[in-house]
Image (tube, rainbow, N blue to C red; front, side, top):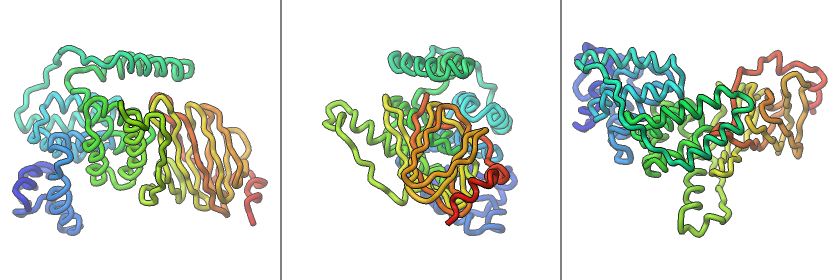
Length: 405
């Protein structure tokens, strides 16, 4: 094992100082890992910390920011303390760690943030770190034109429906949080992107990826984030981010000053390896999502081709600006809340109005594939809700018989 790897990871995975002392020389994972899952121990030593953490595409400080952010956002609090210690060793200062937690309270919820505070306080206490001062500082300057356009969009789209959310979004989230000087704009973007990928919020990524690159993140750095997070948030979340990154990269390249393609068409080549499995949080059954696309602002259309095996379906959900489904194969069902289950077949087009609760998927006896298209509003194209129960799915004997044969 390389000396650099060993020096970087001394506090990353240990649950206690005693466990760290018991770890055999040259090994990084906790001792119990080698007893229960020796293959995991080998991958931890040789691959995760002996290879991934040493890649030059992200500096150790940035990797620590990404890792801590992902762990907090996804509620992996048991691992936060070790990686907070490592972040301190990699040059992230205590006030920045505190601000990462503060920032993620808005993007992953207060419970995760408060739990992270408790885990971080233990690390600070062991290291004798003084309480973080509530620094005043001069608020960061944000681009006035971009902020005016963003705020107007929030007022127009969200204000009439959820005025309180619109008011807090403009006044607090972007008017205060994103201007706090305890983290640079670049680092805030890095924290946000890592949190969104780790929690599978790919539909929120286009706005923040572009914002992050405007804030100073390079394409290489942005591309390395899902590579790193494949090990901390899983391959499905990392792969789900890939088509979104591709779309943002291509759109920015086309719109770059002096680029001949600012007004030219572009072709997103089909990549079977970029397909992802539908998240069990948002789907029931076997679902495959591929050819995901997202246009760059000012356009806001995005979508994907989604294939459902028999019995598979989405959870209940809504779209702020509605959705269009184009059925390409098989036989499926769609239903809006309170309405009947409707059969859909190839060539059928389903129009779902804004903010209407609905679900769609395959029938009991046949698979179904459709192209789903929706517009994003303030970076969001969908709000996921509870799963469609088996009873709800089976309701309506007339619809249940139509797709047979």
